[in-house]
Structures are given as C-alpha cells and as structure tokens.
Length: 435
Image (cartoon, rainbow, N blue to C red; front, side, top):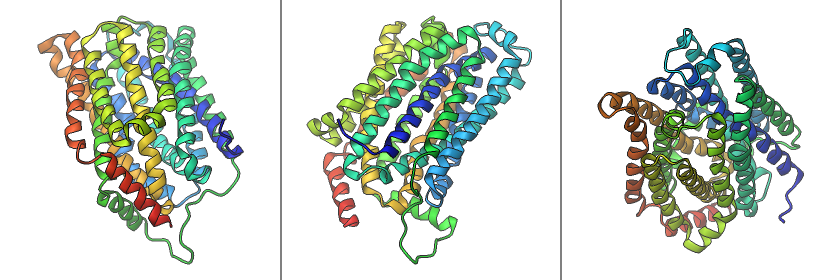
C-alpha cells in the first residue's frame, strides 16, 4: 500500500469526516425542503441558492486562494459551515411539529414562505463557504504529495469521500430523520467542527509559490491572468465547457429528485438514504479502477465513455419506476463521474503552474460548477411549467429525459477536443514549462 505523509492523512481524515456530514445533508436538506413546500419551482430555488455561489464567487475565490494560506482558508470555511448548519438545526428544532407533520402532505405549511427563505439563505451561505473551501482543498494537495502521487492520492480521497458521502451518510440521515428532523443537521455541524480541527493541525506553510522579488499584481490583474490562461488553453477551455454542460444537466435532473423519489418511486426517508448508497459503490469502483481504465482505453476515450454512459443513465432513470433500476443507474453515474474527475483534476494539478493553480481552478469551476445554478432553475421550472400539460408524473420524469438527451449530444462537441493526443500534448507542455 502506498505510504503518504502525516499531513496527507490529516487531510484525508478531515475530508472523510466532513463528507459523512455532507452525505447526511444530501438527504436532510431536500427532505426538509419537501416538508416546507411541494412546489417544484420552489424546490429548484433551494438547489439554485446552493449552486449560485459557484457562478458568482468562483473567480474571486481563485484569486483569494492564490493570495492567502490555503490551509487557513479551509479551516475558516469549515467553521463558517459549522455555524450556519447549527443555525439550521435550531430553526428546524423550533418548528419540528409542523415540519414533521407536513413531510408528505400536499397542503402548504402556514409559515412556508418564512421557512423557505431561511433555508434558501442557509443554502447560499453554505454554498459560498464551499466555493472557497473546495477550491483551497483541491489546490493544497500538490503541496502535500508529489506530482507522481497525485492520481493515487486523489483516488484515495475520492474513494473514501464517496463511501462516506453516499454509503454511510445517507442511510444514517434516514435513521436520524426518523428520530427527529432536526438531528441530522446537528450531526452535520459536528463533522465540520472535527474537520476544521484536523486541517488546523496540518503542519507547514501553504501560501502559493511565487517568483522572488516580484511585486504582487492587483486583484483585477490576477483575476484576468487566471481567466486568460484557461481561455487560451486548447484543452482546458473545452474541458471546462463540457463539464459545465454535464453538471448543469445533472443538477437540472436532480432539482426535484426528492419529489421523484417520493411520488414516482414511493420511498420514505430511510429508503431514500439507501438509494443514495449507489453513489458510494460507484465512487469506490471508480476510484479503484479509474487509472487502469484510463491506461487501457486512453484518457480521451475514457472521457468519451463518461459522456455517453451518463446520458444513457439519465434517460433510463427518467423512464423507470423501479428503485433497483434507479440505484443501478446512480451507481453508473457515480462511477463515470469519478473516472472523469481522476483524469481531469490530476491533469490540472500536474499541468497548471502553482502560482496560477488557484485562479485557473476557480475559472474552471466557474464554467464547470456555475452552470449548476442554471440547471437547478431550469429543472424546477420544467416541472412547474409542464405539469398542467403532461401531468404530475411525466413532469417529474421530464428533467431526466431532457438532460439525458442533451448529455448524449455533448460527445459531438468533445470528439475533436478531448482526445488522448491533446491530453498528452498538454502534459508534455506542462512538464516542459516546469523544467
């Protein structure tokens, strides 16, 4: 087994802990939102609030990451997430009787608008902290392990994260909700506190490496440098655009997923958590097999497989009423997502210069993750607009079907741009620049 240093394992344990909390949150927050409202568009607004920061804050977050100590940024953002999540837990605790009675009701909750606004605000604050936290965490890894170890280090991180995020956390959330709707939020907050403490204990200095005796450019100029570097790159620009399309489509499909699970699959909170364990199985398989598949098929071909497989999985999900089939499709989607991430994230960490890494990563995520906010808005809107025409059932299926069809079409754009030859050329140019 590969031996990593103590700093890596502190980061690994912190990530595992906070991802258990994230897994709990993947069930707790949509279940809370569905207890407040049954309106698809309003549920889409909750998802939108959590994803909008990726569109608004990704670019400045990159400059901040390339100016400050990345370890301290991670700690600070985890503390912010702890405080916000404790606040949500207290809010739910104060309204427990009304919320638990409305979890599957069709009538509006008397205080629906006030509670919905509070959840939307909390989602926006948590999303904002996540932008800075995740950009810093992804940028700090090359300073902890060698570049030759990046694929293995990323694979270990994502494999463990997927187990906690999708295998341990969601079923735990179902049992916690059965005890009290407020309980999963307090558990989630506790994981952020533990993660912050562990990252705080990582030794060393994690400010970006810059050229000696060079004055730091202005904030605006640094932002422009990061954006320009990615936009001029023949591989990373189309890669960011394609990731944005895929993430936007996935968020569009999942904006009203909790209603799909409750009304089409007829599942309760505990079964919903079990359904999400497919993500862990797929993620672990992806983390173990991704590097082998990339070597066997080639990195470009592997990326094409993710585009085609993801589209098929979305369409099958939209057409079925079987929970086991949905579980299998979710497994496939998670497997392909990790395959994509292991190839593309390790490539960025290897090729992008350290003093630009935070900014270019943030620009990449501006495209790749910013489209999630657009997808959330469209997904909720599709259900609300088409329900009077197509009926409730097909309105809830429609986001999966539309997302799957567009997903399949992205490979046409990808074919001349993400092939293995272009990836090898980028790796060679990155190695030459470093030398």
